Amino acid sequence: MPTPSPLSYAGLGLPGTELAVAALDHAREHTDPVVFRHCLRGYLFGRALGGARGLTAGGDYDDELMFVASVLHDLGVGDSGDDRFEIAGADLAARFLRERGMPKDRVALVWDAVALHTFDGIGARKGPEVMLCHAGIAADVLGKDRDLLPPGFADRVHRELPRENLAYALTGAIVDRCLENPRTAVPLSFPGQLVRRHLPPGALPDWYDLIARAGWGDRPVRGRGAGSPRESGGPDR
Image 1 (cartoon, rainbow, N blue to C red):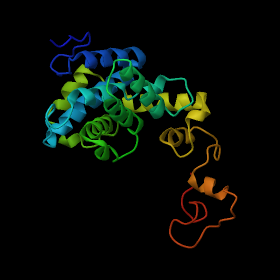
Image 2: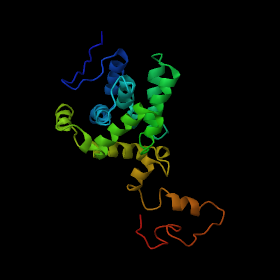
Image 3: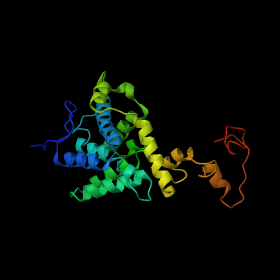
Image 4: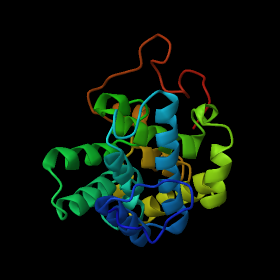
C-alpha cells in the first residue's frame, strides 16, 4: 500500500511510494515554501510534457525517480556551503538517497538531474527522467513549452500550488546566497551570471575578462565576435 502523503494535493496525482513521500517531506523541511511549490510544479509540468510527447509514466520512464529528482532539485539554494547551488543540491539529494539504500546508478541519475538542471538541452542525453525533470523546471520558471500543457492544467496546478512570483523569488534567493558567499558564484556559472548584475562593473569577470588576463599576450583578432563587446562596438555589460 502506498504511504499516504501528509501533503496530498487533491487531484494532482503525486506518487505515493515510501521513497517519494520521504523525498516530499525532506524537500518541504529543507526548502523555502515558495521554492518547494516550484519543485512540485516542476514535476507536474514535466510529467504533463512527457505525456504530450507520448511518454508514459512507469512505462517509458521511472516516475518515482523523476519525482524525487524534481522535488529535491533546489535543496542547494538554502545550503551554506561553498559549492554553487546546483552542485550543493545534487550532493544533498545523493546523500538523502544513499541513506535510504538506493542503488548507485539511480543515485547517479538523480545527481545528474539536479547538478545539470541549469544547463539547457543536456537532459535528453541523460535519459527520460532527467529530460522531463529539466523540462518541468524550465516550464515553471521560463514558461518553456507551456503551450504543450493540456488546456486548463497549469491553472489547476497554480490553484493548488500558488506561484508567489516564483521566478523572481528564486532568482533573489540564489543571488543572496552568492552575495553572502562569493565562492558560490563561479564567474562563468549560472549563479555567476545572476549575481553579476548586482556587483560593481568588473567585480566578477566574464569570459572576455578571463582571456584578457590569461597572461599569454593573446590579442583580439579580426572577425565577428573576436573582440569584447566594448572593443567591437557592441553594448557594454
